[in-house]
Structure formats: C-alpha cells, structure tokens
Image 1 (cartoon, rainbow, N blue to C red):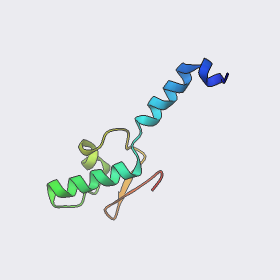
Image 2: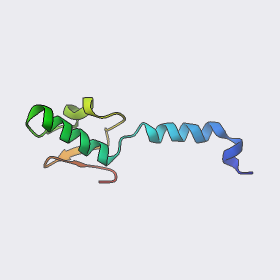
Image 3: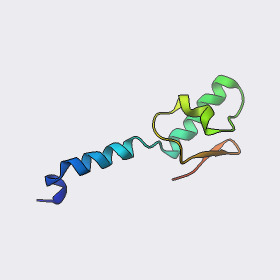
Length: 71
C-alpha cells in the first residue's frame, strides 16, 4: 500500500492546486477569444482574465501569444 493511499488529504490538496492553475494552451485560447470579441490583440493578462478559469498570474502576453510555464 502506498503512502498516497493513506494520506488522501495531501494528494487531493495537490490535485486542487494543479487544477486551479491555467495552462499555456488555456491562456492562448483566451487570447483568441479576446481577439474575436474585441478585434484587437490583448497586451496584458488582465484583459484576458474573464476568458480563462484558473490562475494565470505566471503568464504574460508577448507579441500576441502566451509566454510562461509550458509555453
């Protein structure tokens, strides 16, 4: 039996943290949604926040594309 099976609180806590973080792909998709709605490229992460779920604070927009973890 593994330690993870005995300590479910630590496993579920980690899963929730990872699930709350957005991916590079999600940020890119939010940029596309922003452009579709506003006909202009966003320049800050704050502008795309309504289009993506999760924490996007580790990302930035560079030349109209997401830059950050996993990009």
